[in-house]
Length: 320
Image (cartoon, rainbow, N blue to C red; front, top):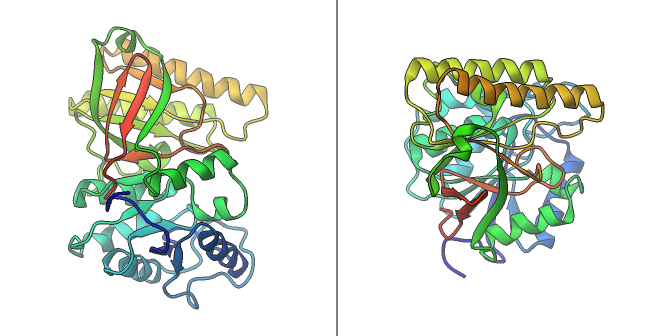
């Protein structure tokens, strides 16, 4: 065990920077973390919990209140990690507030995905933090992910697993022809959230990096729109990533025609990269475990990675 990982009994801060949760959900989360050897703290508990079920994903509480909670979690020196309760919608509202504060003296483990992509971009690019793109606490505490997914995230944060390995497939000629291996930092996240950062102060910087993309509840047509936008961004900026890595885009899709459209959008993306003479290797994780998936596995955003022999590898020896 090294100081780069959590230990039993460590204190972690729980935050809801996007959509909120109910009091019953919070009780489940606190019990779940206690069961797994961690002390949980939810700052502003009396102010940021839903008193009744909310149909909309729009944040029930103001950005100012959600930011106050997040700032406390980021800046205090007595917790070692910040874990998001859920995604949903609204994290992007906190970026302008984050830009007004200084980088804390203490770096922490930060866990979240989906809508949390907005925060992950900021924390990785502006503060140099590494973000665990992995399951959120409502999923874990309510058994909405598999047992293997639970084991994977705790093995990572407790330092029991020093390496992440995922099998990938080549989707483009550029992928098939790359020499030896591709190395660089992994950045990215939820594609629809990432697209909203373009032309803003929080725009993602992907030059010479491995750009990871995934999403959920998007039709093949919308995914194609985002991919087309991304190609135009590449052509305009001329600053290209070393490689593109696709995660899961079809979690929960049961209608064959919808799944076919998503697959078509990915195939078209590979073809359009080639037609536009963008020699960017394109890979896809084969088991659909990266991103929105019941068997969600962790990925270290901001961490070094390599792709060689159709295996994506990340050394997780230094999380924070």
